[in-house]
Length: 439
Image (cartoon, rainbow, N blue to C red; front, side, top):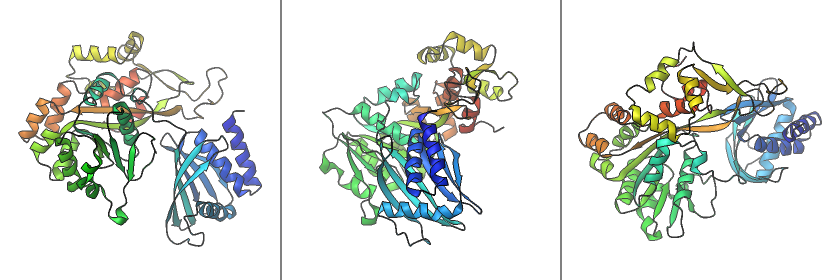
């Protein structure tokens, strides 16, 4: 029996014994050991349940009698010291530090929500024992990697990371900051909230309740003598203007914005009343990304997709791709001749089968899912001379994207397909997160 399985058994016993303390201790340990990002403790009509968000998918861990639910919620409220146990009508927030039974320090960002079946508690986990992974481990490969490494060497300009919430933007930006960190530079970050405390960064927590906002800080940031700064998110015109002014005064600026692709960032910043000449003069690189569930290395096996209707969309993503550029991309990503022939000539891929290849029982690594951990797919759009010229000519975003793809830009579709060919991702995961037709 694995260590995680032992804690699961202890959790079952704690529920049977109505031991709230042991329920919480084992629950936190299981969540951290399974690399869960969130814990959901939720009441339903006839029972309550606990679910974990692992690799962005909620999985039910255990069901328990409803009479235990109020005691579990109350225990957390009391231990947090930031929630009122007697207040059950309003949502409450808390941030708590804890240590698991495997001696891992964690931070919990918790929120309660009154529902028709009592209160629901959701806890986001920040594992302090985890280090920020280097860029090489995030899934940035080939020309995308070369582009990012090149633009990180520039002393100024703006590097933006875009995509929806919880797509790994913060981890990517922290990894970028790790790359540019040296004793010769002063790095300051302004975040809301500060999710990971880094010993070598000057991190500031935004406090809107006392008017310490992104915009108010940016007005006086030069007094801190920064070389590099990260602004958590560009939300309004004032923050965008300040970030662009910072880039024009010889500072390297990292930030995030919410759009669906790299090229749509142009539309977004124009809607924030940015001038085209300011975008051309300050923007250097826009990164779009999404986290996909990676194939389980233990149970993945060769599977035919010869009759898959989605193959036409895969072929479409490679149309107008320069042949020499494609060959260079394949080599730089380390795609073997076997992998390329498997996919292009015979239409075989690798994906999780859920079964252990030795025992043919349920895979003990991925627990029935066929996936283990997550891997990013990335889109890098550098603001080269061609794109800057098109911006000044007021070309539409779709025209700019078409030109970028023709010049060899690796967008999300292409990056995802390369990772399918390399046996890292399944077709299902790639199609789930890119703009292709749904099936």
